[in-house]
Length: 338
Image (cartoon, rainbow, N blue to C red; front, side, top):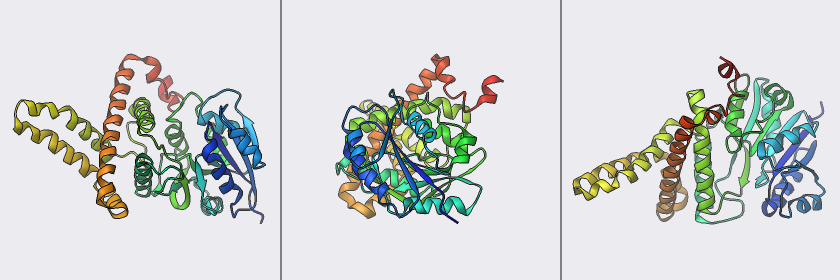
C-alpha cells in the first residue's frame, strides 16, 4: 500500500530569518510523499523570496488575517489525505512527518497528532529564548498523551477530521488553537507525543513575549468561562494558581511598610508560586545549573504576573463588552442560541 499524500502547510508572516531552516527541514524529511505550501500572510520582509528560492510553492492570503486564516487557506489549496501544519519558525526533525503519519494510522480514533519542541531555541540564544524553550518543553513533556489543547506549530491531522471539525475561526488571533482543540476533541482523540519533534525560534525579546502572553491571557477569559474548564495539555489549575500567587505577592508587598511582620505574606505567596511549578524548576536546575535557574525563575515570575494581569484585563472586558463575551459563540453554538 502506498503512503498517503501529506500536505505540509507553513503559515508565515515576516519570518524570513527562520523560514529557510523551516523549509529545508521539510524538504529533508524521510517521508517520501509530500506536497509543501507556504501560505504567506502578506509579509513585508523577504519571506516569499526565501520560499521561492527553495522551489516551494507560495500562496498569499490577500490580506493579513492571522495564522488560523492562513491555515484555512492552505488546506483549501492542497489535496493530501493528511494535513501537516508547521509554523515558519519551527525546524522539523527528519522523521517528524513519517512518525506522525504512523501514529495517525495506528488508531482510527486519533484525529490529530501534536509534536513537542526541543528545549534549545532554534536561532537566538538570549535569556528570554532559553527561558521560553525550557518552559515550553517542560510543560509539553508533562502533558504527553491525550490532550484538548492543540499545538498547531507542529501537528498533523487527517483531512477528513479537518473537514468534520471545520476551519479555524478566522476571527480569533492568539487563541485559535485552544478553540480548535475544544472543537476537535468532541469527536476525536488528539495526542501529544515526544516522538514527533522540532525546534522553535522562540521569542528572544522579553517585551515581545510578555505582550503576547498578556493578550493570550486576556482572550482566554471568555473561552474558559464558557467551557468551565482549562484545556488539558498545557494550562493547568496548578499553573494558574502559580501565576495568581506571583501577582498577589507583588500586590501585597507594600504591606511591609506597615509592619515588617507583614512581609511574611508576600514571601509565603512567592513560595506558593514557586511550589506550583516545582517540577519545572527542578528540570531547569538539572539541565542548566543554579546560575541560570535564578535567571529563569526571575523571568517566570514576570511572566506569571503578566498572565495574571492579562486575565484581570479580560475579566473587566468580559463584564463590559457583550461582543467580547460572545467571542466563542462558534465554539459553543447550542449555548449561544439557547
